Image 1: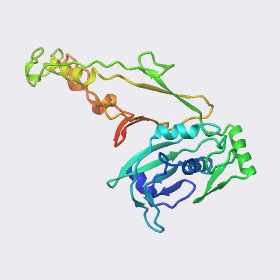
Image 2: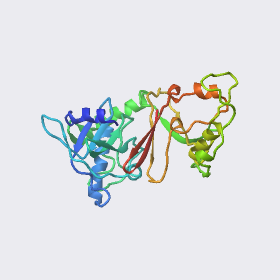
Image 3: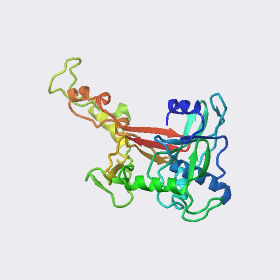
Image 4: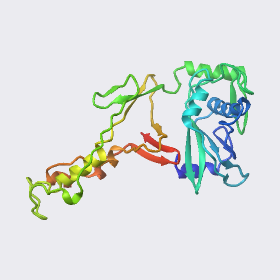
Length: 305
């Protein structure tokens, strides 16, 4: 989510698609009753009757008749929330947590797309009861009636459901799905200083000939080896296993280690070429990139369209 989207949400009222939380959920140090509040909100929005994504904005206080006030919040780990929620529901809920910087403060954003329902707990937890379908109505949370639950199930069976997507890491060379987690082996190289690198080929000034050589080839090679040799390509694959078309699919990867360096292919040094004309013709401006690398306080997010 970017600042423009967030600014638009701040002017809206709480509803089936939006909720404001001034304070962060007491998750890490809370009791089961405390953690059940977050679980209840995610369940309620996931089960709500709506046609667009739902958002819980944490670190934001509602102001009736005006823009919500941004107070800021400490953040939870998305992977921790995923493990917690998915271990307690009847089937996986699609949602994600991300920190978003806005006007000098950090807001926690929980996004819950429209998806197949109903969702419910398989066992009692905290204040929540098992096999109870919690649902968001306007700005309050209640329980769904048996008729509503039946309608949710009927829609699921009718084939008008959301597409079913499966994510996996991939081998880019073989263009196939990895059956296990990816393994990286890094190679770090020392290269000479620029002053120690000789020129390559002949320099004919501003006159460009078809067979001219790139006089900076060795320098370009040194930069490439220094910046790229230690990096490994990470591939992903998304398969649609349903008969429903999937549109505007976005994959978000989170890297929480502070010493990890992440770049898109367009952000790396270009592979050196020996022909001067080829170097002049090659430009990253003509390469369309569907990968965005977004640094955050707690790590790095990669968004792939």
